[in-house]
Image (tube, rainbow, N blue to C red; front, top):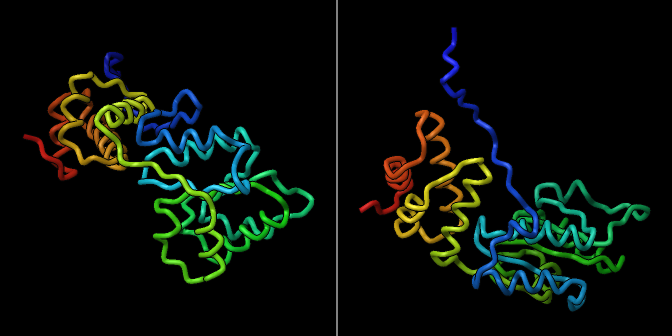
Length: 227
């Protein structure tokens, strides 16, 4: 007979919260948030939103979708979304991770949005000026679009991002553990996501709560300083 006092470990996927109240505003992303909030007062109804991995770009894009009625399309699916059907044109389009999109598909999207009067949000890691673009027409269109970026996070935002990642995984972490991790981790949104994922895995595998010992292990595995 199984022991009812034992907790069954279930590997549940994280459920990211993408509501407005869930977006963590800070100085590093304030300009981007303000530009999204300025909709529909966008010059040319176009915008490039760029920033580091896991910095909240997709979160902002989904907030804009809710406001504008835009269709959200990951770069990998863009080619299959085109051509846009004339009878079912959305009022706006978002292409996420745009640097990974087919250049011809992205150019077609830019042209289609311009011809149909649809708004367009292009989401990427880098500003278009830093992209390696082979098609001159695409380069000129993207580089002519207004752009706003998200900078790297400060300690306060990193702590808040970690807490959100853990909350998305239905995990509660003591403030002392967050306080231990933040000054020792790589200063990036992506590392915050990686640490939360690894700590979740370690806790699940060992049937342990997340404390300083697991934090040290995860930091060491991911190449951070643990002194």
